[in-house]
Amino acid sequence: MGRELTIQLVKKGARVAMADIHEHTMRETAEAAGKEKVSMHVLDISDRAAVEKLPQEVIAHHGVVDGVINNAGIIQPFVDVVELEYPVIERVFNINFYGTLYMTKAFLPKLLERPVAHIANVSSMGGFIPFPGQAIYSASKAAVKIFTEGLYSELKETNVGVTVIHPGAINTNIMTNSGVGTPASAKAAEENSSYKTLPADEAAAIMIKAIEKTKFRVTVGSDAGMLDIFYRISPKRAIDMIVKKMGGMKQ
Image (cartoon, rainbow, N blue to C red; front, top):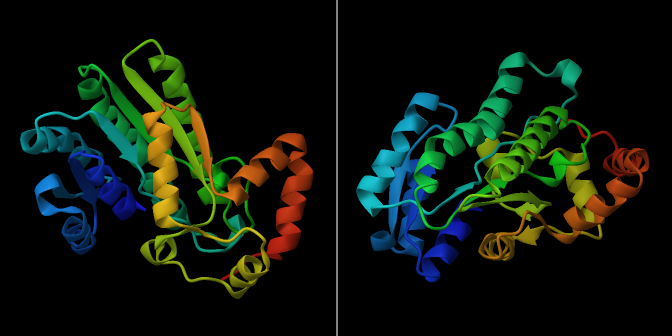
């Protein structure tokens, strides 16, 4: 997803600072997007001290910062909370929630200095409805949702726009990057679903359009849109439907 966002933003005339723990993937993205328009910053976003140094590095390279898209995230192994070890739980929260918090806190003072700026935080459809075997992931993304909505309330009278993004199933490398295999039940559920994974380029285009229009909130993909409506109407029935459909996802 980060690659497609970078490529499309560069095509629109933006200069992009990429931050990722994997240098080789950034190099591949730089080749695809255009090296002269991007900078690469090897970063563990769960390391607060490292994140706090990033704004000056980005400004040194690009001069200013007009927007931040907090897209990094991982899922958990497909196991129930009772079986999940604390280090795994902490890693998911450290990257998904604290990484988003650290990046926002680090860049917000710089964004407030700009005539127009924007923060877009990527939650998930798991941030408003839970999935079997992903309770901790969902909790971390729900935290991102509420945090971003709180930011909106605090910044609505400023020059900084805020968008929370809820993607559904997107064709990305999140399972590989999370170190999580794909359970057979998850594959079966996807194959039998009427909602297929959305290509990453289409998802990125939806996200960028939402930022351009300063939307408060956007769902990405037909599955996210449908579940958003269903959950609002009947939370329990929506969860029961997912549990039945997924059949208790396990590693």
